[in-house]
Image 1 (spheres, helix red, strand yellow):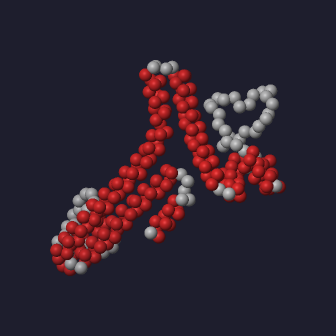
Image 2 (cartoon, rainbow, N blue to C red):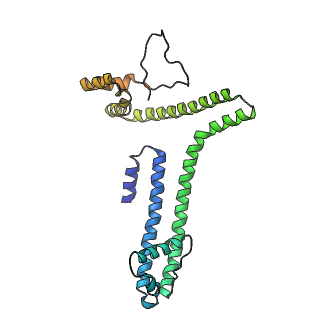
Length: 249
């Protein structure tokens, strides 16, 4: 329970869903490697305690009683109980009993690992599928109707932009939902840390922050608003009166 709490606390610090899934895959793989290591060491202990009839004694000529050969052979045997074959076999009743128990537990461990890995991979595929489904539909439509290359490129560009905008709008909706739950001080601190890097690239706003922190926070939290423009959109043109300032994030 303590480990689960520490793991959950560590994963909460990661904002990327893909990164969280990669961490989980690494942890599952580490658990399998730990099982192979522990069971391999136990297999060597059983072989040493079987005296002259055990697998360690029968492999003295090959250095089965010396490191690192003994460790490599033991771990290799433990790994092959999940998949593969080994040239080391149980020779006495104690070794056979251990090997039987190890095979049963290894089947459960391998099944759990495959199940967890499959769940993570399905989650990753679902995330990728949502991003590519609209593009695939647009490509299929353009191919069926033999649309010209230039128009097809413009359509695909717009669809990709639309996906980006929808993702940002979803992010903005999540941001609004989170901000509504927070008190005003914590809300301003969150907006300051998330939005200030966008405008701090300009020395004027960097100076504003140094001179008047309160003014800068009001600027970031109240005046700075997210917006999106389609590809090749004319934001400013010659002769237009400037009514707003745009920052590219």
